[in-house]
Every structure is written in structure tokens, then in C-alpha cells.
Image (tube, helix red, strand yellow):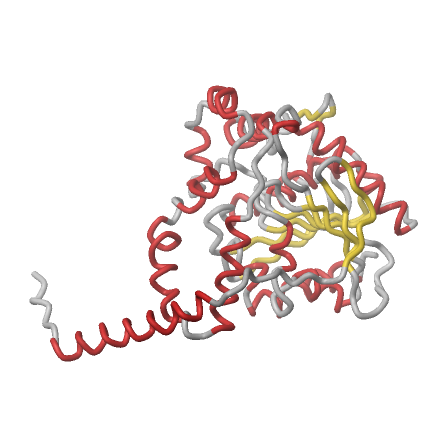
Length: 355
């Protein structure tokens, strides 16, 4: 039996008064806040097609790397998580290490993109983006750095077009979509995706955001905003908080057909590790990936559990496979102070011995 809770009325009133003072002062700061900008690392558009853009990112000096690296982000959210703010930027950090970085910005699909499938995204858009980088950098093959679903796309692409990929880096990338601890997978497997897509057309970003937030409902819908009061009186921390909120809710809708195929083939039937994925008539066999592979996963990732990523080591064909565990979560791997110290240097060191 638990002892009775003893409350000190004076201490309690003190805490309530302090909370009210912080809230009052913070609301004044909040009223004068402008929409926070992303890092906006200097960049040049080198390829555009429909909604997408390939950006060549510019560092302070010339790259020392001889092979360019194309970052392939997921269709969910935007690629600017990799360049969120100056002191939390995977892109800037890689540029400072000497890497030559290109970003694939998928853009925002609309009703005209309703019938785009995985064949369009991987054999179409991604292949033409790789060709654009190869032409711009005057090289025969590029490094791919795939993130989350973009990592899965990069694996499929590397298996189909191995001659165009020199090295492959995957970050928080699902490979085994049915590990027991994958809550998102359990939910996805119960979804009548045909009815869902036939009803919705494109999948609204607001709906997907709601799904992701409900994976950790207390932490992401309540604790986060209660904690906001503690930084309301700190303009720098408040700006950082609002910048992250902007990124979370600045999400593209999903092209309906690509969403249907991805849920069915990857989440519901787990075809990638079975060697049964076929995209545009081209089979995807992870065993055909013989390029060097660096697989980075986050130990506290609730969206892509570590085992979902670690599975890659059992299925990829290369003999040059490296695995790196990061102590953090799905987002922290890009923006935390630890990530800035550990992840970009590790990627650069790994690439520098293989370019």
C-alpha cells in the first residue's frame, strides 16, 4: 500500500506562481516570433522535373571528395531535416568534412500525382536524378545516402542499377518491416490499403502526422508542449522549438498509388527481405548489392526499430558491410549535439577510404 501523498501548500503555490510568470513572459516572446528559417545552406538547383529539385549544396571551400553524394530523403516530411539550422545540419557538417553533397527534394505532390507509383519514383525520378548528378559532377557513379524510406528506395535502386552507385549509406532505414517491436508495422498490416487509397486518393500529410504522433501520444502530444513553457522566456530555445515544429508539420501529401504499393509490398508482405519486390518489372534482390554499405541506425528509434535496420546485414550481397549504432532516436540522429559530433565524421571517414 502506498503512503498518502503529502503536499506543501506554500511550495505548491510557489510553483504555480513561477509557472504563471514564465507563461506570461513567454507569451510576449511568442507574439513577436517570426517563422523560423531552416539553415539555408547556400545551394544551386542542378536538375528539376515536375515537383522535384536536385540541389548542389555549397560549402566554404571546394570539396576534397572525388565522388559526389546524393542524399535521398523519404517521401514523408521534407529533406530539410538534414539542414535544419546552422549548428544542427548534417549537410553543413558533411560539407565541412570535404564531401560533395547533393540533395533530392521531392517537393509536394498534388492531385496530378495521384497515380505515381514506385516505378515512377525509383526507376524514373531517382534514376534521372542520379544521372543529373553524374553529369553535373562528371563521374560515372555516385554515392547514395538514403534516409528512412529514402534508404529503402536507395537499396532498391542500387540493386537495379548497381553500375551507377559507388557506395551506399543507409540511415534509419527499414529493411525487415515486420520485427515484433515495430508498432507502425503492426498498424499498417491491419490497414485495408485499397479501400484507404481508393477513398482518399493522395494521402493527406495531416493524417500521416497524426499517425506518427500517436505512436507516442503522451510524449509527443502533451509532455512536449508542457515543456515548452520552460523555454518560452528564452528566445533562442523558443526559435529552435518552433523551427522543429515547422519541419514536423510542413509535410507533403503522399501520392496515392506509391503509398498503396509501399504499404502492401513492404509493410504487409515484407517482400524486400524475401527477394520478392518487383518494381516496374525489375526484380529487387538485395544480394546483388555488392557495393560497400554503411548502415546507420538509432538505438531508440520508435519509427524504425534497430532490428528493422540491422536486418540489412543478413541480406545484402556485399562483403564490405559496416554497421553503426547511434545512441538516440529517429530525429535526434540528425539534430542532436551528439549526432553532430559523431555521425557526419563517421560517414566522411568511411567514405574517404572508399572513394
